[in-house]
Image (cartoon, rainbow, N blue to C red; front, side):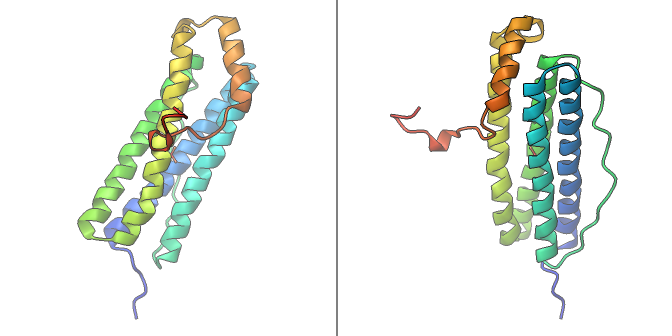
Length: 183
Ligand code: FEO
């Protein structure tokens, strides 16, 4: 009896998403290495932690494909691209790659809905929430650099930003978790 519970199209899309998550991990790894070499150890630490998160996302999808009885295809990971030109550019690029990843996640949600594959639809909801968190975090960081002068931020503003990122929590507070007394 056939035990594969995923369609060929969903299997292909999930495998592609594994590569997207691995690609995002490489982007964080490359930017973290850049930040460390530039002396921004707090920023590097934050980016290294996010590299790990992206690898975990990849593993979640890999496990899901296996648990649904389908075949995992591990492929080459695209190059992360050039180093950022500065801290502002770094976080603009981080935001852009998260937005692109959200579009990929939404496509999978749409596909699973069209196929009435509710197990995959349900599995993907975790990623929808995770992407909202990651975009919120990136927007928050971009706002903070913008206030400090954006691409023209002074060394002392970047020093403070770098120090803050050392201890910044990895998860953003989402709008759905906010209350009147805890805005
Ligand atoms: Fe797993 Fe931030 O994408």
